[in-house]
Image (cartoon, rainbow, N blue to C red; front, side, top):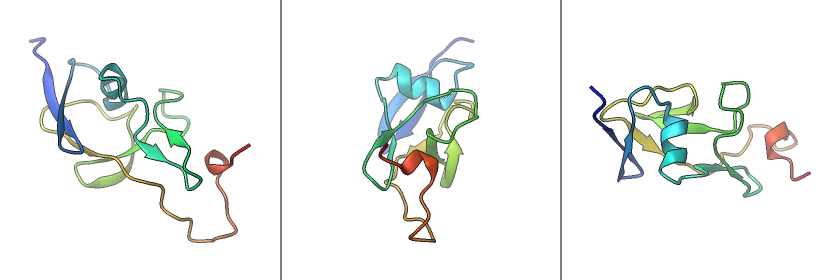
Length: 99
């Protein structure tokens, strides 16, 4: 019942433990960031409880999923992605600032 769960990140097989979130499993596997801001700053698990949006990842083709809230399960396909530009070039989200 406690068998490891296999999933992939950008084609690389990773394992998780039953009950882990995707964010916890990535962190356990030594993956500290899986997206970047428009300014090139790395982002990964930060709050771990779904309050912030630092841990966004594509899960089974669905972009913008919070890794800390997605339960790890067998066969998940995870994809990292660079930041996408804001629709309004003058708009800058709080997490994209370099301050």
